[in-house]
Image (cartoon, rainbow, N blue to C red; front, side):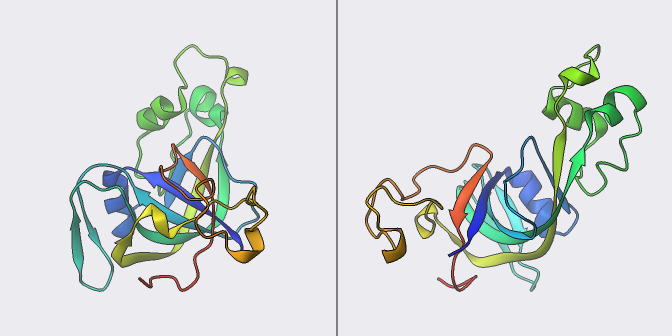
Length: 183
């Protein structure tokens, strides 16, 4: 199996992604994977109305489920210098559905900071979006690591250390699912 990423996203952003308005997800870090790679969207707690693109709108009350997947085909650096020194940041955040103040707040780029004290952000480009007809639970996923029992090649069924019980704070590696939108 190949590595993929499980990424936690707030309901308001999930709605915009499902509508095709948000085409770039902003993060403080990036995976050490070659693009393209698959990302599974874990919707955090909250309520959202998500369209699957085929006319069906699901109203997710409470969130806490994997609502879909996308291919991250490109990751672009969002440079702190663009925001702090030049203020020419609009091109860098095109597709994020975020304002310049929202990006600065998320990054922790405060007024008066020296640019060398600020870490750049990363824009994960979203393509090939699939919204599931039925959301998945975390139990559909396994961490992408070798099992401590050496069962990696055998599927590691029933190993608590490899089972995902909590969503990621931001994102983490998982094994890519077989069969896409099935069960």
